[in-house]
Image 1: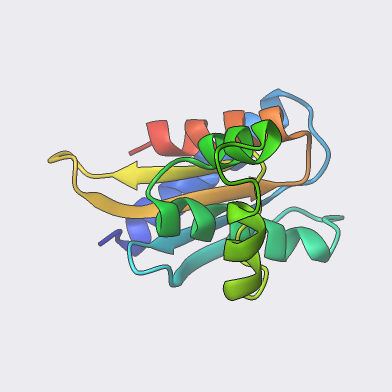
Image 2: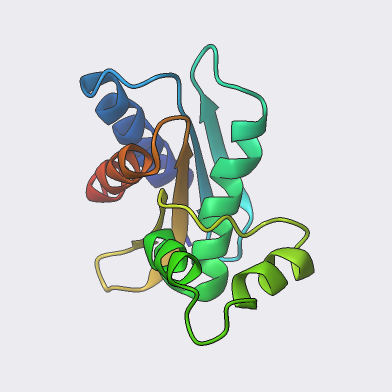
Length: 137
């Protein structure tokens, strides 16, 4: 499971990346491998709904076992079962957001320890920040 120290490092790296890219205010949610919120950081001026989007990107990635870019690709392409993502979202109370910005986190032994979700900018930019967070591990 991700430690508080690791979660802080992930969130800090994501925020640092956002500032380097001069993005609008972002939020960062780091969840443990059970889908529980470990830490959430919001930059000043972040829209209140982004809080839920950050969490849902990370939660959906954990729940499906893939980074949210794969969920977004499946949703956008229609896939073999176009209603799958909509059904998941309905079953989870809106906790699956098919947008880039949710990234799985692994320890040194490649064990899943959590996920990070970022929201506030364009999906590609959110993902870049989330990956910067992952790289901080």
